[in-house]
Image (cartoon, rainbow, N blue to C red; front, side, top):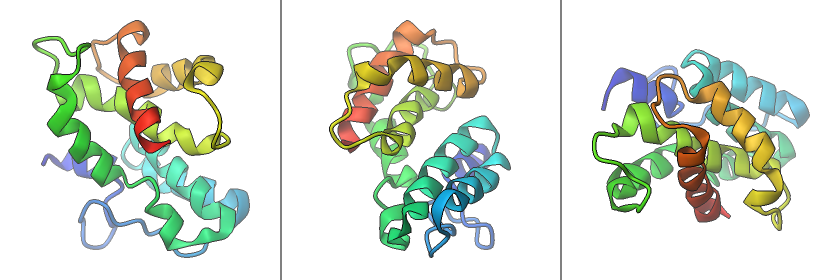
Length: 156
């Protein structure tokens, strides 16, 4: 796994191991989202998105268990294994460059909305998020939206 990928997965700041959620221990309210986003900012826009999602959950006061509700390490591993089987996958797409940002838009943003929220009802916001985090992805929103919707539905 590349250093960039580890950073995008909210790696522990001390050990460097992905999947550690240091903000998952009791930061409250909006401060949780801010802290998660701040930690993620070190990894760029995608890290900010993932860190902010985890921080928002923690900010709700549920602590470490809630931070694991959206486990970016598990989601990244799942989609890394499954992405090439999706009907929207195109030969030549690179998971880290092209696909992972699209999946992250779905799974990392999901917690911002009520449990009964539908992807389609918030698609304009999700498209804005895509344009903020897509980086070097060669996918346009019309392609990325299907991956984002799959990731949204998986964590719903």
